[in-house]
Amino acid sequence: MSLSDTYVTLSREIAASGARLVAVTKTHPVERIRELYDLGHRDFGENRVSELVEKQAALPQDINWHFIGHLQSKKAKTVAPIAHLIHSGDSLKLLRELDKRAAGNSVDVLLQYHIAREESKYGLTPESGRDLLNDVAREPLRNVRILGVMGMATYTDDQDQVAEEFRTLHEIFSDLKDRYFEDDPKFSEISMGMSGDYRLALDQGSTLIRIGSLLLGERQ
Ligand SMILES: *Cc1c(COP(=O)(O)O)cnc(C)c1O
Image (cartoon, rainbow, N blue to C red; front, side, top):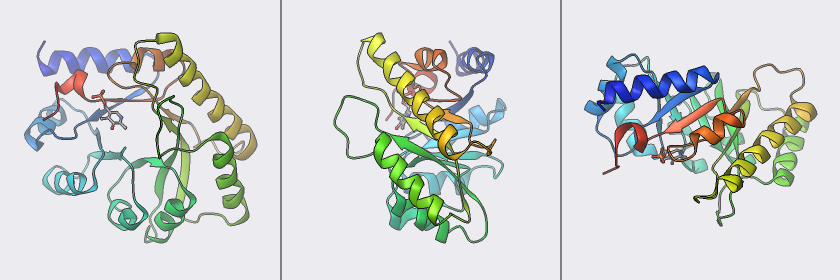
């Protein structure tokens, strides 16, 4: 299938479930991103700050750039002004730094949770997520808006396992909604699902699907 056919099929399937597609373009050249842009796509995801900065400068300014990789606090000032949504909010330190570097603009962030069985340095647990939000309740963020949650499932063929992890993330979202965001309609996003597991994620209520290889082929 051509890029155009794959794109149309995939984005229709995702839209039919009420979710949105983030095209993950890491390692792919700007010409390739331009092809999707010309098909009308505007939401693109990158996981490295330097690559985001280069591509953002080289491409049209109406692109929504999603930052999906681990973000060090010291790079907050670079990413804050150019990211449409930062999916990887995983510490209070990072959120406070983004808040400081927002320069009067709002910075939209998702809280990243560690839901996979694999070991990972990154991602909140239900407990550390509540600690973070209790701290934010005591001392509110002025410019950072928390719009939902993000997570990555275990890399496995076990569909039940993956579905279970996505279900867990949805439960975390609902719990946070009840405890902290009851009166905030903007807290509405669940970013989960990639090339290998996006259908399971759609079944579990994903609102943002992050797809790279299925759309653009193998990464360089
Ligand atoms: C690379 C990446 C993706 C896309 O992965 P594919 O399997 O190529 O679809 C999604 N989310 C994150 C956080 C990534 O780093």
